[in-house]
Amino acid sequence: MIHRNTKFFLGVCGAAIALSAVAVMAVRAQPPAPAPAPPAPPYQAYTTFIQLVGPGGRTYGFARVQQTPPPLATGRLPGVVLHIEATGLPAGWHGMHFHNKADCSAADLTSSGPHISMTNPVVHGFFSSNANDFGDLPNIFVGADGKATVEVFSPFVLVAATPGDGRPILMDQDGSALIIHANRDDYNAQPIGGAGARIACGAISAADAVAAIAAANKAAASPAPAPAPATPPRPR
Ligand SMILES: [Cu+2]
Image 1: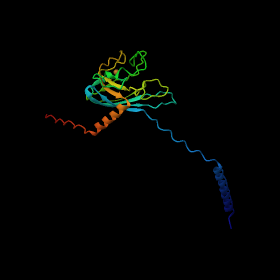
Image 2: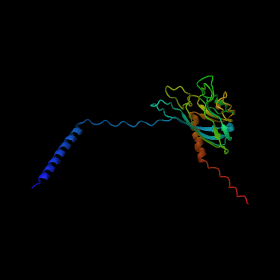
Image 3: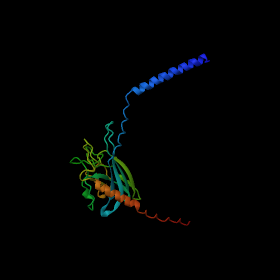
Image 4: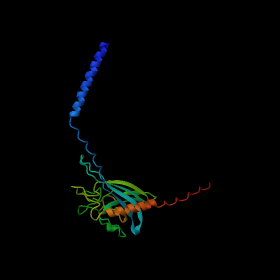
């Protein structure tokens, strides 16, 4: 004999099972959901690698330029992040600019041409009225040990062409160069802020990037120089 409450319980369960079956049939009757969209491909950053050289084949380390992605939703324009790891430079402040050509062959490095620019005449300097020098960059500071590790952002140039963008392209047909000057750039005086002679040059082009990467790998594979012997403590 089945208790009355048990009968009621079984009845409710039966109704629930029947409703579930109907629901499953209803779900199965719907057309199959479309496959999820494939994930958006990651932004292919335009990145290039630079070897810094000086007159006489002297090397001063490496740098990297990487174009930022275009955040189209905000309307902000992309630019480039410049990362430098230099050694052997004179201590103190030095002006730095993007110049027009990937040519560091001249003894005074003037083969790299004037500042990269889209206009003529060029008005140099962050603090100059009507400045239009697309090669402008902030100064760098080199420590007493000759080393400088620097990261700066430039909104004035791009590594590679972006549709609809009129800014200079670092890796255009004749490339460009990163130049480090002997003196500090005052960001105002014409034509280069009093930055003086060119002391280091990094050619920026696809071929120079390949050569720079090979040079960096070779430098990394060579044994590090032995550390200087510790100075014995002076007797008191
Ligand atoms: Cu310059």
